[in-house]
Each structure stands twice: as C-alpha cells, then as structure tokens.
Amino acid sequence: MRQKMQDLREANSTSRTSELERQLRDFQQREENFQRQLRDTQQREENLQRQFRDLQEREQSAQRQLTESQQREQNLQRQLRELQEQEQNSQRQLTESQQREQNSQGQLRNCQEQVSELQLSLSTAQLTINEFRSQETRDWVITRDEIQITDKCLGRGGWGSVNEGTYCGCTVAVKQIHELILSPHNINLFEREMNIAAKCRHPHLLQFIGATKDEGTPLFVTELMEKSLRTLLDQRQLSETEICTISLDVARALNYLHQKKPEPIIHRDVSSANVLLWRQGEEWRGKVSDYGTANFIQQTMTVAPGAMIYSAPEALTSKQTVKVTRLRCTTVPDIVSAMKIQPLWTLTVVDVFSFGVLLCEMCIRQLPDPRRREEQLVLVTNGAFRGLVRRCLQMEPRARPTMQEIIDELKE
Image 1 (cartoon, rainbow, N blue to C red):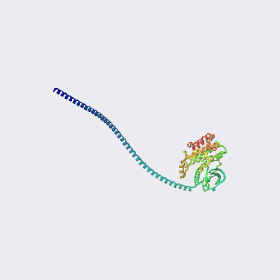
Image 2: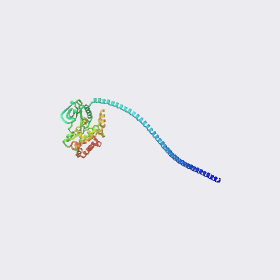
Image 3: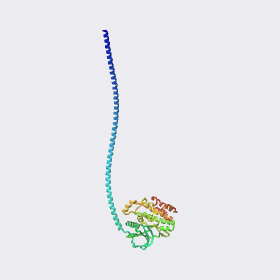
Image 4: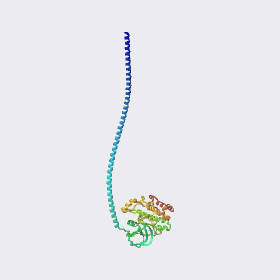
C-alpha cells in the first residue's frame, strides 16, 4: 500500500513535473514570443522614430521652401508693382507724347498756313516788284540807231563779238551778244547785269556807256581802249614796274567790286583778255572789263570762253566756303534756286585765285596751264611776285589773301 502510495506519489510527482515542464516550455515559448514581439515593437518604434525624423526633416524642408516661396512671391509682387508703375509712367509719357504730337501737328498746320500766306505775300510782292521794274527808268538804255558799228572786229568769243563803233560822235567798243544764247530768261538776266554795270564807277573799271533793250540782239557799249593785256604780252616782256602798276590797277578794280554796297560783285572771269590797257603818259594803265556781263556769260554758256585756265578749283564745283560776299539774288525764284543749288554765301577769293594766275602770266608771258602750274610759278624770277602768286594760288580758299591785302602788299 505504501508502495502504491509511493508509486502514486511518484506518478503524481512525475505528472506534475511533466505538467510544470510543459507549462515552463509554454511560458518560455510565450516569453520568446513576447521577446520577438518586443523586438518587432522596438523595430517598429525605431522605424516610426526614423519616419518621424524624416517627417520632421521634410516638414523643415517644406517650411524652408515655403519661406523661400513666400520670399519669391514678395519679390514677384514687388517686381509686379514696379512693372505696373513703369507701365503707368509709359502710359503717362505716351499720353504726353500724343499730346505733344497733337500740339506739333497743330503748330505744323499753323506753320503751313503761315508759309502759304508768306508765299502768297511773296508772289504779290514779286508782282509788285516786277511791275515797278517794268516802269523803272533805265538810264543805261540807248536806242539802236544811235550806235554805228564798223567792220573793225576787236575780238570774238563763244558769246558774240566786239566791234569798233561810234556813239554820240565818240569811238566806242560795241559788244554784240550771240543770238543762240538769248532767251526770255537770259534777256532778263542781261538787263539785270546792265543795271549792275550802270551803277559801277571806278577809274580802273572799263566805263560802261549803255546797252540796247529792244527785240533785236542786245548791244553792249563801252569806252574803247587801246589794246588788251594779252596782246601786249604777246608783243613783249613787261618790266617789273609795269607789272606792279597794271596788277595794282586790276587789284583796285576787283577790290571795288568786292566792296560794292549793298551787294558785292564777284567778277569770275579775270583774265589777260579782260584787262584792257590805255596810256597815261609813258606808262600803260589797266582797266578791268566784262564786270557787267561776266555772270551773264557764265550762266548762259556751258563753259565760259577762256575761263577754265584762270578758274579756282572750287569755282568749278558747288563747294563753297567763307571769306564771303553776298551772292546776288534779286528775285524770290533766284533766292530759292540759290538755296537749293549752293549757299547764299560764296567766295570773293575765286577772283583772288584768278588774279594770282594773271600775275604769274604777266611775269612769264605764258598762257596759264593748270597742269604746269608749279612749273610756271618757278619761272617767276621776282621773289616778291612769286610769293604773292603762291599765296593767291592756295588750294584752301581761306588761306588766300583778300584783294585789299594784295593792294597793300603791291603798294609796299
């Protein structure tokens, strides 16, 4: 019994031990599960913490981006305000420009109206002037039957011829203008030049006596001289005294024309053929001719006869400079034409250049040759004359002397 009890106790003990072991294993299993769950939980916690940190970083980055976006938005708003202000200024300026344009258009219309009124006034004034001129007494006009022309020819050119004649019992020179260059415009121009010539009075200008004004070819009457300077140079060499005397006479005549009031005159055709000589005692004295018809001849001919070899370089072009004299324009069309073609101021020193060429010709007895200008200048033996010629032939017009300076130099 005791043994059974012993066995029963052992069996119960074994059973309890087995149960306890089983419970222990269960407990251990549960503990392992708990440990695993704990590790999983810790892992999840770590993941959550990492995710939380990532979220915080993303939030900070988002905050930073938001701040930057707000800053950019503020900058854009400021730029937008500036653009709006610029647009407003541009609109205001455009409005002001449109207003100025409207004002300018109004002023332009007013100016155009004033110009139209001035043109009408000018036309009326021109008609009045023309009527006055048509009624003006021309004391230079002489009748054709008062002039007797002989067969003795004194000279001939592309513009016409010069014959000896008589007027009021005096021997005179009569220039006949060629019919081919006559036209209503040229006849009016010729009459204007005659008005100018009639007002010129100087001892060394060829005396203008008168001219015809009828339907025939114009006759231009002047005093008769003994010979031209060109003829005398063909005959013999001039002495230095003769050169100085004749060149002074020419310089004084040109200076008188350049100083003419109210409108100076440019001769533009100074040459040995247009310097005529007369005797005063034992010496030759000079007078300048064609001062009344030089402009007429040059404006009606393609090339003025004999003018090219004496002409200044700028006289062959439209280029003009100062050292000035007023260009003669007596009618409104003349003024308009002159303003379109060339300035209202032109050179008196074109005559100075021609005077220098003439002085060189007097010294060397050779016709001027523009291609041999320097070579001919070297042939002038008198140093004073050579220096004066060189100054007159300066290519730059401003560098040339005036006729008054030339007179002063020759007198010395």
